[in-house]
Image 1 (cartoon, rainbow, N blue to C red):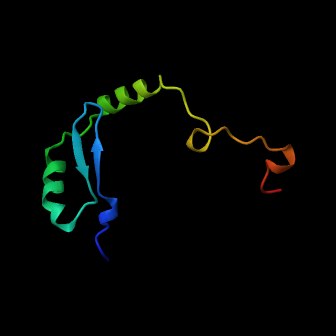
Image 2: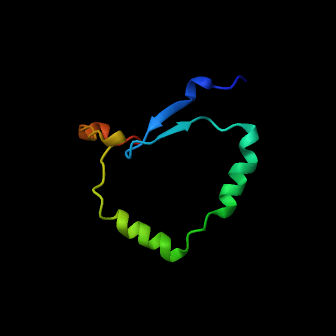
Length: 80
C-alpha cells in the first residue's frame, strides 16, 4: 500500500505557529512507544474530576449536533 501523501498537511494553530501533520509511519514506532511510556496515567480521582467538568458542557443532541428527527408513533417501535 502506498503512503497516503495526500493526508499530509501544514496546520496553523491558534497562536499562529504551524505544525506539519502526517499519517504515522512504521519507522515512527519507537518514538510513539517512548511518548506513551513518558505520559502519566490517569488516577481515578483525575478521571472523576474530568467527568465532573464535562458535566457542565451542554449536550449536543442527535448525530453531529443535528436535531433528532421527529418520527410518528408508528415508526418509533422496530420490533412489534
